Length: 526
Image 1 (tube, helix red, strand yellow):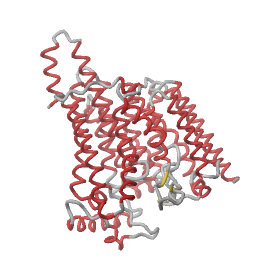
Image 2: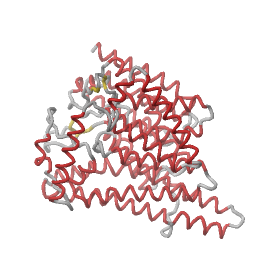
Image 3: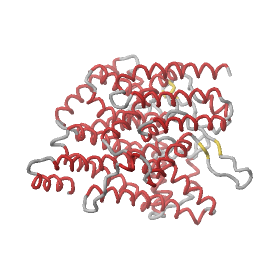
Image 4: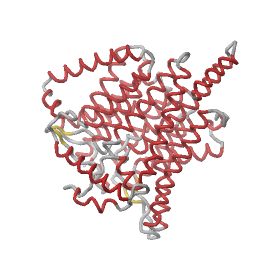
């Protein structure tokens, strides 16, 4: 218990200081009242977690904090993404009182979905939320609206394929459970983000909220590495939950994970926050704050020692620079900064370790690379046996890949989808994201002449989506990666609606609106 108190003090002190440092910058993107509400909820659930020894009592306390937040926050969608990494993802099966064998594991993400997303989705569906009243009228002839409808159909088709293809292999109760979990883990994050963020300010707020959550985790990650001790595993020991957080090392250094549940997941989140900060920093006039934000996220990313997210972060930056205005100038400047960072890193005391940890040329953990190669080869052979609709029991054919921890580590989300549900499902999955990405790029082009800010926002969202899709080739869709991936798709869909409305408003005030309207509309539509 004494150690638990020590961890609580460390978490609360470091997080409080981080809130104080971040407040002047983040209140440029969110109101002071919303910042205070989010701070209170974050600190509240962390305090409750370390003080309450019973998991279900903690769930009750956390639910009360969530209700407090959703009632006072002007943008609950931003509160949702902000809280995704506020607590460790451990959980327990919901008690069934002997009625059925089990329901599902209630972890932090599903508690957030139940308390925050379900009421928001219901109010929007009934048209009783402030966000629903501001919903623009869809135009069937508008390409952006057609893309949104196509995305809605594709995500529903992807969920339906997962449900239908597994029905012959499981009971009706299991199918109902799967339907509920698909709604909580996938459909609700996409629906709420895509339907409730209807202004430029709301989109910015969501991006800033998620970035703020990663700023808070950087000092905690640094503490874990410096002390060679994880902060949150004590909770899974106290609550008696399944073991999610495990000690992972590389080159003798502990790999930070804080609340993420895995160092790769934390690295993924840092890369996504970096993509958002590329846009947000354009609205921060002080150069020092802009550099401090980048430096913090780079440090957080480095502390994970996760090579996939390192490459993903580089891809995020590259795509953003290519899509943003003055792409060539930005690429040259970024290359200079990257070269300077590489030189400083290599001449530092950690230079040899950094070189050994690099993807492709590094020599550390070569066994993991061999494992990935074996997994890819065997997965492809198995996919060829049932290419269209997959092999639900595919794990039984991969027993020789079971590791010492007793698991078969599916480190590629695309292989997992193709194995479980076939290439048809994989095609639907990729089509969903590619349609959104392509339409966002078209919307950016249509607005780029007059609205640099929207162009940068779109570039940030698209770059994050492209980087995220690349990174899930090295990690499965699990823990916070799954809900954030679908929430990000919802945010991109919302960007399409906002871009359409901004374009419509601009055309309405032009003196020669007819010809220009036709030109801009065709640009958005082709």
